[in-house]
Length: 550
Ligand SMILES: *[C@@H]1O[C@H](CO)[C@@H](O)[C@H](O)[C@H]1NC(C)=O
Ligand SMILES: *[C@@H]1O[C@H](CO)[C@@H](O)[C@H](O)[C@H]1NC(C)=O
Ligand SMILES: *[C@@H]1O[C@H](CO)[C@@H](O)[C@H](O)[C@H]1NC(C)=O
Ligand SMILES: *[C@@H]1O[C@H](CO)[C@@H](O)[C@H](O)[C@H]1NC(C)=O
Ligand SMILES: *[C@@H]1O[C@H](CO)[C@@H](O)[C@H](O)[C@H]1NC(C)=O
Ligand SMILES: *[C@@H]1O[C@H](CO)[C@@H](O)[C@H](O)[C@H]1NC(C)=O
Ligand SMILES: *[C@@H]1O[C@H](CO)[C@@H](O)[C@H](O)[C@H]1NC(C)=O
Ligand SMILES: *[C@@H]1O[C@H](CO)[C@@H](O)[C@H](O)[C@H]1NC(C)=O
Ligand SMILES: *[C@@H]1O[C@H](CO)[C@@H](O)[C@H](O)[C@H]1NC(C)=O
Ligand SMILES: *[C@@H]1O[C@H](CO)[C@@H](O)[C@H](O)[C@H]1NC(C)=O
Ligand SMILES: *[C@@H]1O[C@H](CO)[C@@H](O)[C@H](O)[C@H]1NC(C)=O
Ligand SMILES: *[C@@H]1O[C@H](CO)[C@@H](O)[C@H](O)[C@H]1NC(C)=O
Image 1 (tube, rainbow, N blue to C red):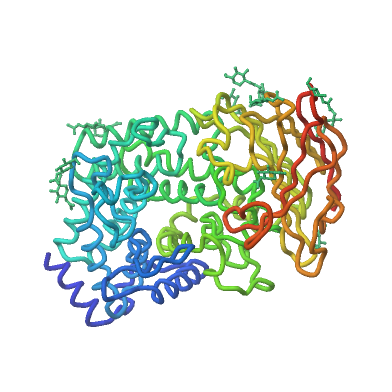
Image 2 (image 1 turned 135 degrees about the horizontal axis):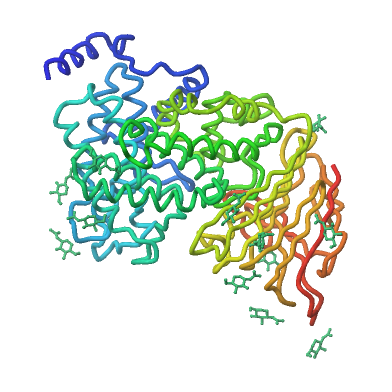
């Protein structure tokens, strides 16, 4: 108590002098931290102690909860001027608004934004992932663990207590989640959200000596490992955003639970290494992209949106490894999903420890493309969507990658039933101005067989028929090259040849543009819609074979 007060006196007296700086960040993490806090400072509204709601489309007035908690981690890390006081106000506000009615499905959850009407009131029906978001328990809960573990000595006693109580309620509320029940989808295969619950329950159960809560964390951990250890991959495979969240949750487990007998804590360092083992093989340093296939991606080119894997790589190697700072000088907030950049202060705080877990070979692979091209093969399994494990095959070369998953699933669009984010066949290439072209399958079927070889790709729909189509999302040419694409010969930088298969080899091509065309953009990405159809009355299994030439 005395000790804590003493520290507090020092921190206000010395205005964040080195005495109270708890975390020395690496050069790369500090640059990430500074760039993200500049944005946070600019949109922080001290009159209500919340960040403004920074999300496309921009909101007229409201503030936002989750990003504000991430920012509070940054404030505590920076600890200058009135940073700690603001963080305290934020924590009191957010925890004050946490749902307290134990009978509702969203018990223990946090608001999406502070001005929202009461969830469950007549005007504001409870709609999961809309009016309330069950994952906010995990996102905010994990951030509260970091605050408690790293910075509690900066906080008044009652706020420390609030954090623990908040975590307790959030953990209890999270036990209401069961995949397939009440519209929820928290199956063990929903890797990032499942891991956050596992970690929070394991940590909070121990903190409260609550055997039941601790046991729930153990059960979750074993379920997760049962899937992961089949093929040492996340079920939510190679998601540029969500692999980053899974690594985040596991880093918390490794840092704060590894010294306990927690199953997730003891396994976390190994899991982090195994995830980076395959992610570093799939990362193409020349193209600054994870090669496909992607589960749940928020775009088609990581140079043009903010993915959390890019942020992790920034902490390891620097910004220029994920965004081309020579040719791309645009600020982060001009990219789509820029709001995901708001997690940066939290990742920066974890980054030194996280990096200490990685073998040098991973860093080397992330740094530059090896001399020779190579093929990655692996498997991922995400029940209940997957009837059987997906077979992953990805060929990578410096300027061209072809990455695919063969699958047989119960739904169209993968585990999240979303064809705009499930990308089971991805072709990316580098263009003359160092921008990226892409030619990706837009899923319309429940099963796909994909065969990959250097410069070639065969796709087959084993369950398809004469009505099946192969739709590809094709990047616009770069500015100055051909404006219009009416045949595949018009594509800049890559010759795409249709060399066989049972489709009509002449595709229908339309444009899905920001302000016009035949169809909608996807995650802010414009594209040419290249659709191959089957000949009328065909009785063949649908297939299309391509070869490519740079
Ligand atoms: C809690 O929620 C239930 C179900 O909506 C409702 O009937 C009850 O009145 C609520 N309790 C309080 C204290 O608001
Ligand atoms: C936790 O929930 C209980 C109701 O179960 C409520 O009384 C208490 O205020 C909540 N604590 C916090 C910190 O929200
Ligand atoms: C124990 O945990 C389970 C699942 O996590 C939960 O459903 C149950 O209500 C808890 N029981 C007690 C007494 O807390
Ligand atoms: C992947 O998991 C399957 C079981 O789903 C197993 O048969 C296979 O041997 C595993 N492959 C590898 C490379 O571990
Ligand atoms: C972990 O240790 C606690 C006592 O410290 C014990 O009650 C518990 O059974 C242990 N759990 C496992 C999974 O070994
Ligand atoms: C994956 O490959 C195995 C072995 O070749 C094959 O038996 C299985 O059908 C494939 N799975 C899918 C979903 O294509
Ligand atoms: C897909 O899985 C279902 C259910 O297990 C099975 O009946 C079907 O034969 C499989 N299809 C293919 C193409 O593998
Ligand atoms: C990849 O493309 C870049 C830019 O066009 C070019 O400078 C480089 O030589 C290419 N590398 C290889 C290995 O083809
Ligand atoms: C595509 O299928 C054709 C015909 O079966 C075959 O010759 C070619 O090798 C296949 N390509 C790949 C990448 O498997
Ligand atoms: C193809 O299959 C779909 C879905 O099973 C069905 O709706 C459609 O009528 C079939 N088309 C043809 C031409 O058989
Ligand atoms: C692509 O174009 C086809 C028509 O050729 C259309 O049916 C389909 O909905 C479009 N797909 C997307 C994702 O825009
Ligand atoms: C397709 O089949 C239908 C029904 O058998 C027939 O009427 C039609 O003429 C066929 N069309 C073509 C182009 O063969």
